[in-house]
Length: 122
Image 1 (cartoon, rainbow, N blue to C red):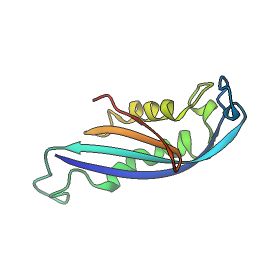
Image 2 (image 1 turned 120 degrees about the vertical axis):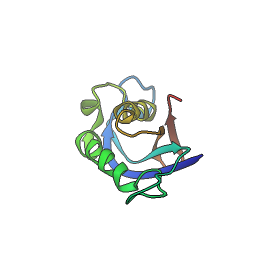
Image 3 (image 1 turned 90 degrees about the vertical axis):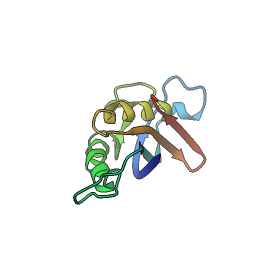
Image 4 (image 1 turned 180 degrees about the vertical axis):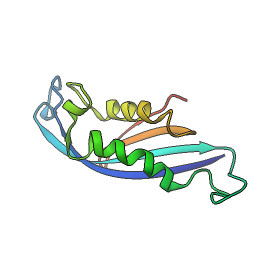
């Protein structure tokens, strides 16, 4: 099996309205988003020969989503929730991409270098 991982970065703010700590205040993060694609097969012919998928094709799907909903956005508004946690964001991204990226295995969101949430429906 092959696994491809494409990494993206974005800056965003949010507020966890129900949190019992500092995250109940407005704040922001430098997020890292990872898209994991799996496949048992490689493309056999043409310009993508011996690839699972071209990394540029992943970017072509993911970048508009980041630009529209995530990068330099207030996530409470763009994701329509009063508690846009990393777990929520990972699931939201996965569901937006699952029909656009064949082989999507999981989505990972890191809000800091030591905190990561992973979502998969497999």
